[in-house]
Amino acid sequence: MKMLPIFLLMLAAGTSAAETTTFKLWPSGAPDPAGYESKPEEEIKREKDDGIRRVTNVSEPTLTFYPSSASDGTTVLVCPGGGYSILALEHEGTAVCEFLNLQGYNAALLKYRVPRRDPANPSREPLQDAQRAMSLLRLRAGELGIKPDRIGILGFSAGGHLAVMTALHANERTYKQDAALDAPDATPNFCIPVYPAYLVGKDDTFTLLPEVKVTPKSPPMCLIHAHDDKGVTSASASALLYLEYKKLGLPCELHIYTQGGHGFGMKPKDMPVEDWPFRVVEWMQAMGW
Figure 1 (cartoon, rainbow, N blue to C red):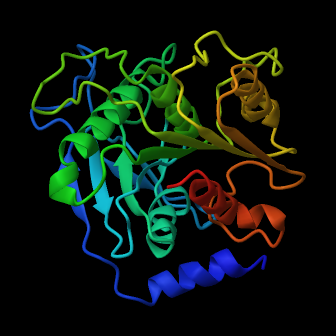
Figure 2 (tube, one colour):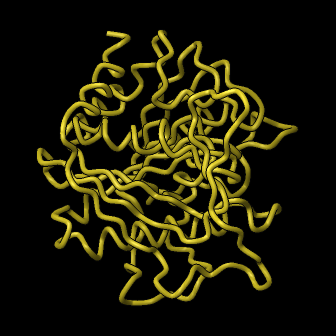
């Protein structure tokens, strides 16, 4: 059972995938801060290849839709991680979309702006991109053959933080909205943070930051983490977030694996944490998606 996710990825690679469609999120240009100078997008190569594809200098964010022929209309917006500096586009992006397709779910890969525009508020521009991406999926639901009330968000590390911020602050826009591009409500119908970062501070990993505020309207959540994750990505963040949901009696599920560290994504680990995608699918099915 441990190797089943890897087997499915191999199966996905060996079958003809459905044709994807890519949309620009900001046809007239992304609302970057005044004076920000973008650099050409590039892939970062390391002297010792670790199998991770890293892309940076993203100034034209996009949404790539991966349709599943077996879908009932449920769609998952996928947000790769990378510390708001790069995007790990494969093991936390395309591989996740392919896996979801195999399980009968549509997927949409969010390529959000990196690196950080403002070190003091690194998620500001990525959150704009996520809000616009959720809006685009809702507004084009008929065109894409998806259900606007069955759109969730899944993210890893910084992308996990982005998923949480989108779930909790979806309609707090910091850009000028366009009725043709922005749905009135960009709140995801469910949220799946995988080892989310930046929910706690460096000096106190047992207290959620003030902006991580759960309300009675917060969407159902399924949290994935490893106990041996550390620092601002500590598993305590997921546990604390779960408790906030518990206090309000909101639907939430929490999986903390003893081992796995940080950044495991869809990489083979030969340990129980490798099966996390199936726990997510089981949760989605139990919730009726």
